[in-house]
Image (cartoon, rainbow, N blue to C red):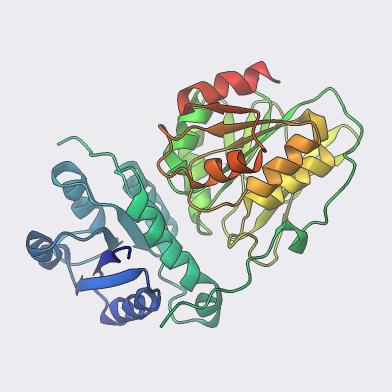
Length: 353
């Protein structure tokens, strides 16, 4: 029998600690080994027993979560899932935490709400499971009831025929766990005249704005959070806003994006399957699809649909993936034309466009 994933919860709020403990304990694969109100007490607990995953708050007394994260990754790397607020300043701080090696982000603001109980419970447990199997990089110096897993049909109907091919190519990308750093590598390798790119990265709302701004400052191409009706043009990447599905659409020769609400698809919103389904319908052979590091199977079915419609599809390889779940599922379904290490994907995308 597989051993349970041992989790340490570090948060200065006793209410949040108890809520997270109840949520995680409802999953038979997870065991909460302890809780701590601040990093100093957490460090003492870790000296006695090392957890498989740490659930870490950002703002705490005596030592903030980012400083503690940096110390952990420098001295004794342990997979960390960040608990954060929705504020813009919190989003910027959380981007720094991801750079330091945090695996996932969980929003604290919804703890206890009806939407949290219906949607976020599964996502929190999934984040812990993803972190437990993630490849982490050191930094120098009762059973859970699962809600129905919806497919892209819930947002966009399947299409048997794509629109007539045009001369313009478009790239659609899906990523999850480990994707923030993988996307940085991919986009920084893109030339100024790169084809238009639309990206779904599993990330909470309000954090995608900060993420896009950070990438825009380091890439030759423009990077922005997608807004409804944004045109997909050369030299620009659009990142799906958190908690909103993003679809590729076309009017004549113009590609644009539609931002819409809807149910969780493959347990995510935004969903890679939804983006890939829309690319199948509106771009067909003109599309290049890329699926990158991430837990689960979101995007696998959509990538197969793209490949069957004549699109060229690429998966990140196991060696460079933090979690090989999403790429592996797409490969197993037969939806991938080429499997490549992260550093080779941009060149292949340009070659095929």
